Length: 133
Length: 133
DNA sequence: ACCTAAAGGATAATTTTTATCCTTTGTAAC
DNA sequence: GTTACAAAGGATAAAAATTATCCTTTAGGT
Ligand SMILES: [Mn+2]
Ligand SMILES: [Mn+2]
Ligand SMILES: [Zn+2]
Ligand SMILES: [Zn+2]
Image (cartoon, rainbow over all chains, first blue to last red; front, top):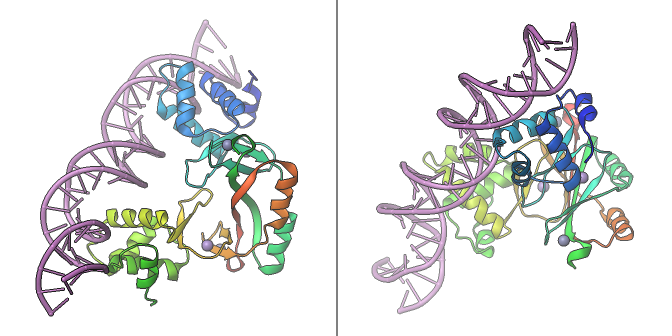
């Protein structure tokens, strides 16, 4: 149970109990979609509003406290902002893993092939995870 | 104005006028989202139903006639299925370009770092396109 | 302790997507 | 070319997802 009060404030977000709980849910799940997050939050706050979830997710995204990861053929998942990394998505169990990949080969390839100035790379690799094979 | 009759049938899709028009819209735009596609189609069929657009996009996806590309912070775009490639997205003009990238460096990196069996890679590079810089 | 802008909850409204139902049509068999 | 029929289109209702509104509560600064 990490205390995210300071981290929230650093992103100009008031440290409400709901936000602290969302932070911990994101931390312990790693990556989670809106519906699952709402389910989890209902266990802690039996009358939390779905609107509160949406409002917070959107505000946290605006303030870069969290990031959205778009998953092929599935709902987006959200995670606490961390150092740049790519994602592995298991098509069986739907689990999302972080993986640190060196993007230099790709970035230099783009550089030599086009005049595009890249500012962000989103890489999602789909397949079967260790546990599912 | 390419005739997509055979290509549609190859994917077990009846060649209706609406589907032929959708095919051509996808071909000439390269990548297009649902709303823009609907706008374009309305010009050709002034009474086409939005439901027809959705039904066809979903069926075409199921039959692998088209592919969805999830764009960070934006709506998904759709394209006719072609050989594997990655995407460049301009954050200014929103244009989506295809780019052929060699994924081997990444695939081998994953192989040495984990037991994940990759079957598909989705790479979206965001930045500023040639025309916008 | 007090003040106030911001956040939460309840819920309405809006937007997005899917389902339904009836009419029309693409296409295969004759 | 005609026929037959499953499939597709259009209109629209329904459902699902997301956002807005409004009033109450509260976090955090003074
Ligand atoms: Mn991650
Ligand atoms: Mn493409
Ligand atoms: Zn798995
Ligand atoms: Zn551009």
